[in-house]
Length: 222
Image (cartoon, rainbow, N blue to C red; front, side, top):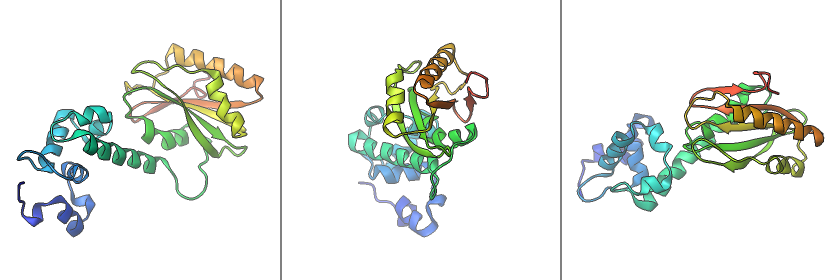
């Protein structure tokens, strides 16, 4: 095992200078815990960043992929992925009162951190009360890089069970471009018609890309 001067160790630097003083590689190294075969945890972390290009790109990887990297393995990959997921959830949640989703920008603020860097398509339904406050959200479908299968039954069943007054549909485009496809528009119109039969309102369908979003309600589709 490589012996470092105490002042160069990420854990000691964190306590002495604060987490904000650490580089991305050092923060990753703390999650890894240890290195392998003559390489420190920071060495492994730097190699990860070099391989993928940025911390955001590392955070977007599946655990199976990270586990295959030399010096990582299944246990360290699980720690990394759980840390990234905790970060997404913290950024997506507002402490205190129940979140109100009355505008597409509020939908993006709530769900963008959870979805914008995913490598596969995820379709969620946000369940709202009569004041447009978020009761709960449910993942309806998880698909491939370019498509996801969504059935009206799976969209509206959670709304009925939770006695939601209305819903907002949310899904991501792994390409990073939130421009709605023809399938997105077709599906939205189909679900709007189904919702009418259930006396349920769909406020919006928000498509999330990397750092931006598109509201189909603002586009006149709903």
